[in-house]
Image 1 (cartoon, rainbow, N blue to C red):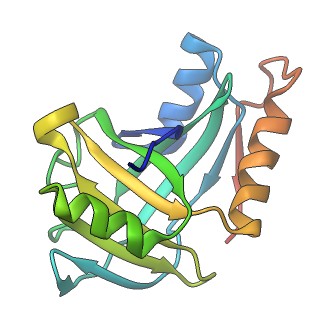
Image 2 (image 1 turned 180 degrees about the horizontal axis):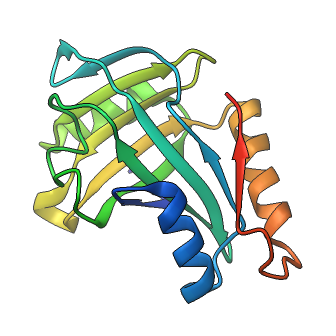
Length: 173
């Protein structure tokens, strides 16, 4: 049995920058780090090659990372499966897995479809698995590569002792 421990909850939002400031003010989450138009080397959506132009703001709520994500494209995507461009809601919960291919095979055997398999230009592979029938949202899986684990650690470290000032910080990709 593959026991999953959530490392991130992601909300689809129309504008991650605006949502980040709002979440910091209303919920005390943050600070948020915004990456715009994250470069994707490859993306398969339901087995077909599709572009995936997205931006995300990453912040912290206690031990859990918060992602505020939007899809800039007009074509089909794992985000559009659930939300129109102007809608907001929980899209996915993310998990580090020991081996991505094994996790996808495990959930495929349980009847869950891999909706998206993508790789950033930095080499991070991630997948969206449709678990809406059981939990109402997608699952995102990726392996805990050193660079990804360092980013998670960076965001968490910046949240410790954060005083609420400067809730949105832009990063370059």
